Length: 410
Image (cartoon, helix red, strand yellow):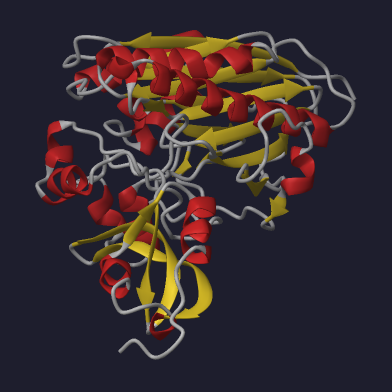
């Protein structure tokens, strides 16, 4: 079987509202990516550009097998996370910056995809057009939990709130997948400046009916025609050769890749993959036919992935409850832990001790087996109020160092 040839076309545009472009794109020979930066004009630009540097270093490399290729791509995202985070800590005017990141590495007949945030990847194959990535957003979480309907997603006031990003913490959680390329496949990467304002039916039709260069321009034009409220970035890959086209071919499997408690220098990410089974998805657009509502099966669960400790709870509450997202303010929820109490037991929570409408922004991460009655009475109020921790290890240290009562302190 001949190896496929992949060509790429891309464009990034400031849009109609923003004064600067915080998006970035990468078009190499074998590596392609879209990043949507956050953290203010300079911070967003720096975050997205910095995140792409480790990916660019992979361009043109060949790998012995598919696992090694996906591992290398994942490791590049880990390095991107470390680079953005380190620069954020080093430069006060960049504090709190982060970026989404969706990237593809083509190696032989395979395309490897990694994803963090709400920039998307779509696959056009045969007569179908499917969204490969899951949005790491508050509204997707609410949808997964059945708290809102699919019809409410597009107009929800908190649709810009994301739950995962590169560079906002010391670790990052990554979605990854691999697919065998087929002749005629088109892979679309885009920031939410496109997907947030142009519906999937129009995107699918544009990708299917126009040559790649024209399609990219038309997609950007469509986003601007819809108001251009955000920067818009589009990268479109076209596959020639390779396996025969087959619209019924199995779609890729998704793995969750966690970098917690691991040094970014390791290349052994293949051992950390957790295969979640076949990625059966409902086509979100049938090219040339009717378009059903998005009904994709969620593969990675419906809980928050990370909540960033550096965001003040008050700011988060004002932004979410006050509807700041409706003004284009993006609140980044990434990672936080606290030690608290549940059912008279001291537990480690993941998240913030905040209730936003029906959504509790914390959940029990670990039960410690230590009862509230096991610690002195003077310590209990601070635990009942919730004691913040820098990370999971810090939370465990807090619990380990709690004084114990020799006798009943009640």
